[in-house]
Length: 328
Image (cartoon, rainbow, N blue to C red; front, side, top):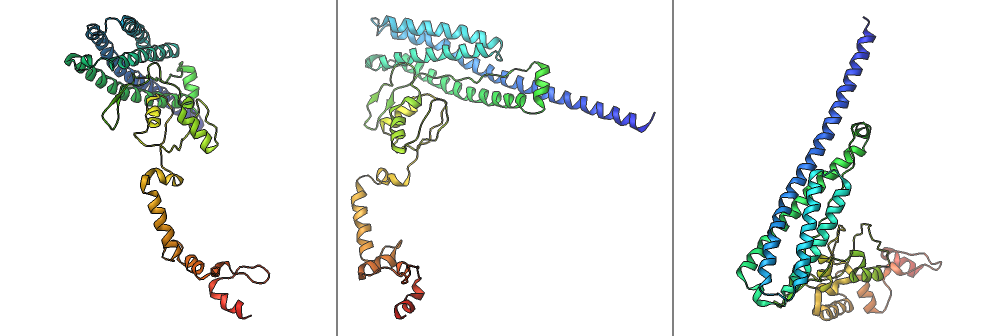
C-alpha cells in the first residue's frame, strides 16, 4: 500500500475522533445543566413543603381571609405538578415555560399573603410563623443561587450547539436548545430608615420598562426604553428612595445600574449644595480657584485672558506672544 492510502486513513480516523470528542462535549454540557436543574428541584420541593405549614399557622389568625389562603394552596399544587413534569425532562422547552408561569403565579399568591400579614402584628410575632418565614427566605435564597447556576450551564450548552462546527454534530445528534429559567420570588416587606415596615405591592411584579422610574428616566435622557431590551439606566436615586425600592421589587431579567452622574451632584451633597456653590463662587471671583486661576485673575482685572486675545484678523495668540501683538 502506498503512503497516500495511509494518509487518507489517518485523516479519516482523526476526523472521526474529532467528531466523537465534539459529541461527548455536548453530552457533558447537557448533563451539566440537567444536574443544575436537580439542585433547583431540591429547593423547590423544600419550598413546597413549607407553604402548607405557613398556611396552617396563619389560619388561626386570619380565618376570614380564606380566599387568599386557598389561592396560595392552589398555586402551590399547580407549581408542584408543573415542576414534576419539568424535572422528568429539563430539556423540554414547553415544560420549562409552564413551570416558570406556575412559579410566577405562586410567587404572586405568596406576595399577597405576606402583604396581608402586615395588618396582623400578633401573627408576625408568632414564633412558629417567624421560624417558617426565615426558613422560606433561606430556601428562596438558595433557589436563586441554584437558578443562576442552571442558567449559566444552559447558556454554555446553547452556545455550544449553536457554534460552528458543533452545530452540525448537534443537528445529527438530536441536541435541542434548552430554555432559561426565570423564577420570580415572593416580595418581602421592606424596612425603611425610620424602622417602619412597608409591605410590597401585591400581585406579580411589573415589568421594569413600565415602572414610573423608567418613564422618568426616559423623559430625562430622551431615550427610548423598550421592553425585552437590555438598557443601562442611569437613574439619580438614593437607596432609601421609593423609586429604588420599586426597581428592586420589580423582578426582571434586566440588569439595572444605579449611578450618580456629575450633573446630579446635588443628590450627593444634599443641603450643603448652596454653601459649596457660594464658596466656589467666592474663590473664583478672587482668583484662588485652582481649576481656572488665570481666567479668574484676568476677569478681576477687567481684561480678557491672554488665550482669548486675537490679532486684527481674528487669529488666536498665546500669552507668550501677547506683548508683541500689543506693541505691533
